[in-house]
Each structure stands twice: as structure tokens, then as C-alpha cells.
Length: 379
Image (tube, rainbow, N blue to C red; front, side, top):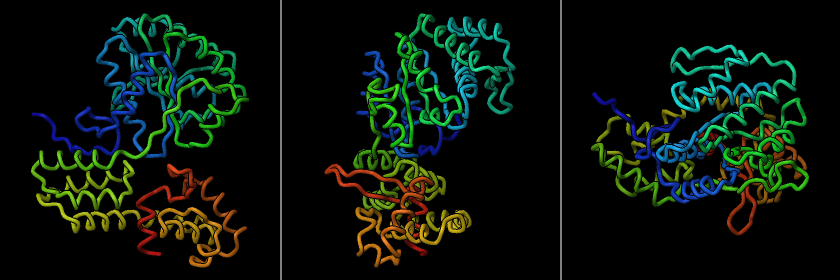
């Protein structure tokens, strides 16, 4: 019996049928891969970049001449961690029975790692006994050479790539660039949600990765495409949700992928055959009750001026001039200097983000849509 699938996944990647649009971005990534170009993929958090990567991998794997590897660098704190992440990622991507896997596992036995297996997924986990930087660099060099000479094209997605700038080994960026530039059959997708740091890594002329990759920015999914996607899956599964109700949901979630998916997932799981605006508001009330303790903790962690500024931005949705006197007076934020300090702190804590309109105007917005809507309602 086939398992029942909620068509609105909130984590991971299921299959193309449950992936909404992104055709333009997919085409760009496929064309770059086939042309041998590295790509820098930049997006706000929870915009769907990881799902897009796995959507790309799904299509590349159909072509059979590709090895695809994904590694999330956010948990890494050193070059050794990076080596372990990549070795583990390849161990999971290359079965020992495959041609690439045979070469990889033969090499693995030579470096004698400690191999364990995830008790839930059964996927191998690799621990490397590499105390010297030279050994860490050599292991990565050998791994890249193995992939280069595997007879298959390889694409490696390094998620939250900006994390390497935090490593104690200060030359990691330069060393990694020198390794990558010599690879002909191994390509990279450098992903990240800390847009300013990642942009500087690839656009500043003094940085090692300067002009070494095509940049692709991931924005909001087209509203019409999202409306059609939601309507199709609701109707297919005997849920009625009219166009106005879908439009209300998308507007409330500000088209931010993760929050749209969460709300649709919960509405679908509720089992209601008729989904209305009241249904959406009922789910929102439940979400707020679940998250309220977390949101109140934020208030304790922030200073009073920071909390007031966060609330002011939430109530305005988008703020273009946070130091303007009208905005400061309206939300009782004190002085422009206080606002500037609070603004910097909230950006550093990733409570808010800065973005640009198509006409070049800069604005600030609360990162977490649910938190923003809660503040709008309760503060």
C-alpha cells in the first residue's frame, strides 16, 4: 500500500510533483552544470534553496553521467569538519557497488576513518582522525582528485558556504579556491542565506573566490504559479479552496516559501473538505499558541529599544527609512542613533533582513513571517 503524502512538504524534497515552479532557476542551474560553470546561489533563509538543489539533482541523476553531492556546512567549525562533511556526503552518495563507490571505498580504507551508521536512516557517518592541517588538506585534495578521475561529472552543493570564513584556519578560503580552480569535471554550487557575506566572497576583487562563479538569486515564487500549485493539489485530494482564499493565504505569508508550505501543510492535514479564510485564521491561532512562549523569550533576549524597533518594523511590514522622524515618533523609538544601534543588532541576530526593491530602494523586514504577524497582532 502506497504511503499517503501531504503534497505540501515543509522539509526535504519528495519528487517533482510536489515542487512548485522555479523552472527559470532550474533551467539556469542545468545550463550552468552542462556548461561547466560554478554557481553562487543566494537566498533568504527558508526560501527553498535546498529543495531547489535537490530538484536539480533529481534531473541530473536522470542523465546517469552525474554524481551529485550535497553538504550543509552550517554545523562545521573547522577545516577538519569540512573534510568529514564532504567524505560523509560522498559515502552517502556513492554506493560501494557503483564504479565511483568502489574507488571511493577503496581509498577510504587507506585513510582508516571511523565509520558509524545513523540508527534511523542507516546512512554512513564518517569521523576522521586528522589533527594536522596538512592531513586535512591532503584528504580533501585526494577526495577532489578521486572525483575528477571518476569518469563521471560531479556537482557538489555546499550549503551555507559562508561558514568557511569562520574557521580558525584563516587560509581556508584561498586554499579551497586553489584546489577548485584545477578541477575540470567537478563543479560547485555555493549556497548561502547570509547574503552580504556570500556576496562579498564572490564580488570583492581581493577575495580568493572573486568572479569565480555565476550568481543566481532566489526570490519569491511567482504568485500565479503558487496559486495554481495549491489549487491543483487541494482539488486533487478532494479539498475545496477558492482563488480568493488562496490569495489571502499567500498575502498573509508574504509569499515566503516556508511559511506558505507550513500553513498549507496544516490546512491539508486538518482534513477539512472546504477550506476558508476562517480555516486559515484558525490554523494561525494554533500556530501562535504553540510559538508564543518562544516569541516571549525573544523579548527577554533583546533590549527594550531592539524589541520596540522589531515591533515597529513588523507593524509597518516594510520599512524604507527606519531613522525617519515620522517612523521614530509613531513607534516611540527614541533617537535616530538608538535606532541605528538597534538596527545593526537585529541584522546581526538575523531577526530582520535588508533587501532591495526592483527600483533600487532599500527596505527592512522581519525575517520570521509568523513572528512578524504575531507582533502585528499582539504588541
